[in-house]
Amino acid sequence: MSEAEKEVRRRMAAHELYTDALPGLEGLDAERLRAKELAYDFNTSRPADTGERQRLLREWLGAVGERVWVEPPMQVSYGKNVFLGDDVFINVNLVLVDDVPVTIGDRVMIAPNVTITVTGHPVHPDLRRDGSQFSDPVRIEDDVWIGANAVILPGVTIGAGSVVAAGAVVTGNVPPGVVVAGVPARVLREITEKDRDFRYRPPRDLSGPQ
Image 1 (cartoon, one colour):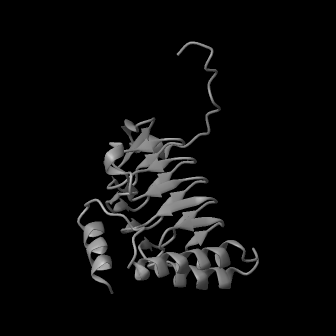
Image 2: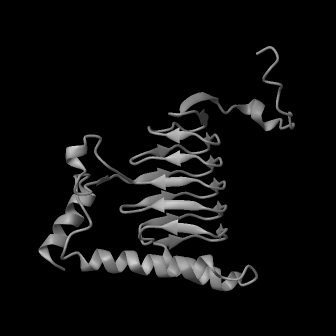
């Protein structure tokens, strides 16, 4: 491994600015290419070939628990930094930017078109002209439900049992056992014993009294 690559990997782990588009980063380049090749194989696999899909997932990702279901397509940057617990369900079009670890706990449900990214760029243009970025791990604890089109940003932890509403952009840590929604996401309420009494309630008329 070159000295340039050692330094980039150190910066990744230390949440410092780095660019992964430099000469001498053959190891990182090879890891990203491997992830793309396995993504292609997984995403073009036949629906009935569940055994092959499971084999590819275990080759592609850092860890895959028992009874995991991932509905293609899914895209990742490296794959080796993604760790899935048991009984995870992932619907279509999940994007995982995993320059550093993304850890997903047991019984997590992820709806369509979700993005989870550990990586961002500086706001000031002078600091990102060379493509510089930073990375911070994301952790999703057990029994979380992430709604469609949600975005989880770098460094976020989502506490056990919480719900991220559809379309939310999560920029900060989410406590356990709450519902968050909005852009940026805010806590709407706690999940309580009353939520055990589930009855479907049709959407209310937004033109009527609030």
